[in-house]
Image (cartoon, rainbow, N blue to C red; front, top):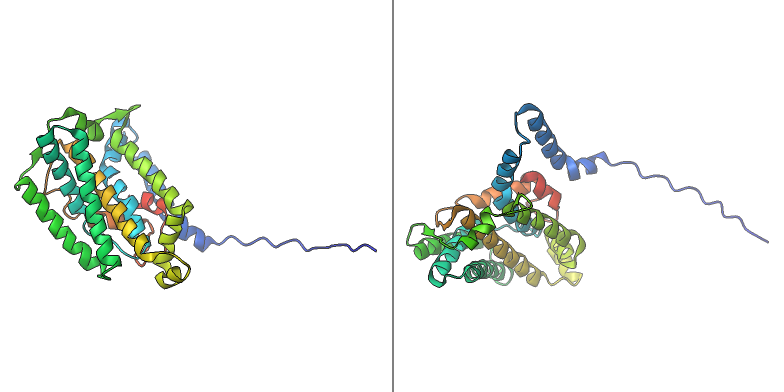
Length: 282
């Protein structure tokens, strides 16, 4: 005897317009504004204007990629502007004293990594609020930048260093290429790696993430360490564009970066954030 399986067809899930708008509204709005400007403003799409626009958002875009992880984990970092300034100063001073571009860049990146590690350890291990912690490091690092530079700009004479801020590859400025690479890499990191999933889990519910086996403290420290490192990279690129390390730059930059993320759709309370939100906000 045979039995006939008359399975009913599975009903299609209706399109959730609210979820669609929540996920894509800001990016679509940004695209709409771009198209509107292209239609209404003469020479908006000219190579010169596109180059200037890309350079204008490059520093914010680079720093926002890792600020996304801070916000997605339920925290934020107010020290990024000071790290950018201090990184440029450190790079300029080391290059002036050693005449080595690589040592200058390495010292700047190391400085950013150390600041990020300090932020992460204080927040994760000592349980100090991120606002208090990063506000303190913002003031300390800014003060160090002024002390290192003796309160004035530190010039850079090594022409090889200027490639990072003023060079081009296939006609595209290097800072824009680095920004695109950061968008792609950190978007992949957030969506397709355990590190990214752990970041979102911590932001959504840190207690549940801990019970699920996520090393919450280590992940938080890593998030802030990477953010410090990338902030220093943004500072190096900016110093290269300006041909000097300037301790006064980047004031208020932290609010610009956070605003770019939040306006794009990243949640301040954590657990919600995608790289497309950052792109839309930037």
